[in-house]
Image 1: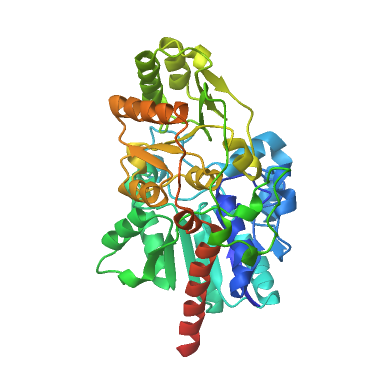
Image 2: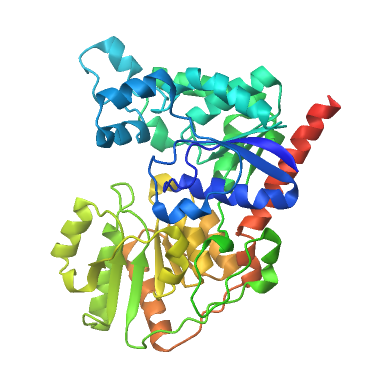
Length: 455
């Protein structure tokens, strides 16, 4: 078994969505000959007790946030305030806006973990060498993980693989936070990291294509690739009546993944959004479309319902009241992703929301949705999403237009009432699971190490 250093600040039992990708790779890469030694945040940061048992039994160095700065913070700030300070990106909102020099430094591309990197390096080097790591892999955000990975790669000469997940400098969501100075610095840091890396991985084809275009003539296009997010069927809890798959990567194949046998009350149409609603991704248009669908079909409370988990925005709450949807909308208790497959199978339609600014992104919940094998309605302009749902036959993508959303809702509702079965493409869905993704990453590792040895 070959060892590699995995820099994944958010790693189970951390509940951040970023932890899922790192966990899936950590669990499945050993099947293809690679075992991680993990550098991560303390287990107490954003801890989800439900995930404790999922932490792989691999070497771990849990001091991504540590050293004298962390010690001073722990002494000066209450635990609640400290947790916020280390998990939110720095936006410089507390700087005095009337000082032009400070204004230039507002929003520099450093997250709250960057300040720990200098004192982290010696321990990270010892950990890397102790575990005989042959390669350095970093996943972000936080994007400070790439700063650490780049430094360690330069100090050791080991091959470097950067897994951005979401795009960084080309993403308008990040760029909107930075001053011109901040953007210039972010671009310079990113370019140096990319030049040193053997491979740069994105998690969507659209972000991969955007990066290829942005760095055309500067970095060889072959250096960029993409591995989409995915679901690991071994991580989900199963129904008591079902036989849980064995906890070995090789036990789960496309032939063993079959369509859901879920049935529900013929008279009730249940919709759910699994996640937090935010200002950039709220349910405003969907709620208007739902009202239109209710009026068109003359539906009563109990015949259709919409459930949300987590946070709602003020706009969502106002819309629910203004559209008189209170009897049709409910908030349900948060469900950790390990229980999400059983939970989501209770619903007739799984809703995914994507704003115009997310044109390079695919929400992580899509893969939980695919694992649940329930019909999906995605509000998006993303052509990649259309391709995925078309290939898997798992649902439908519609633009962010109220009349088209309402029409799609009516179609899903009528299919449910008429008990028309949803027949999905199991083989296509398997391609979005953890084993194929881990095999792609293992191939990248093999090539990177091989190239170093040849040189």
